[in-house]
Amino acid sequence: MEIKISNQALKWFKEDIGLKKGDKLRFYTQVYGNSPIQKGYSLAFTQEEPLKIAASTDLDGILFFVEDGDVWYFDGHDLHVDYDAKEDELRYEYVKSLHGASPLGFTGYL
Image (cartoon, rainbow, N blue to C red; front, top):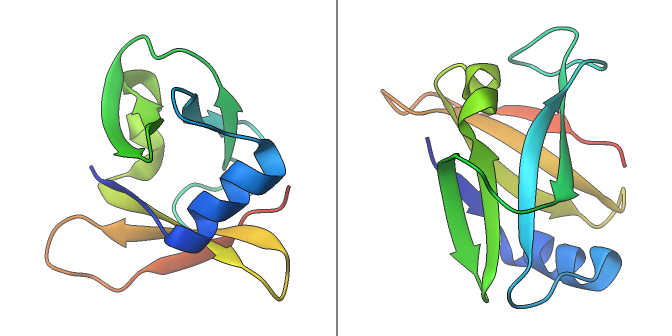
């Protein structure tokens, strides 16, 4: 599993959330909402220290990660995070890790 954060999303995390070098941000599963890959569940994020990282990416010294316990949610997809300026919100895309499948888009409401 890969995590990709666009430059626009990184800027949003820095400006709106106040993330800075040395911070850690976890993407995790929450038990309400819907996504294109899991009904009844959605993706959220929080700042916390990692325990058992399954996937991560480091941008400008900020660690973005998913824990082992949340990998089931992604169901074989990579996570791409972008920022939609028109809607002023993050956009999560779940891209099948194998065979180059088309992304499944989901706009995350904050």
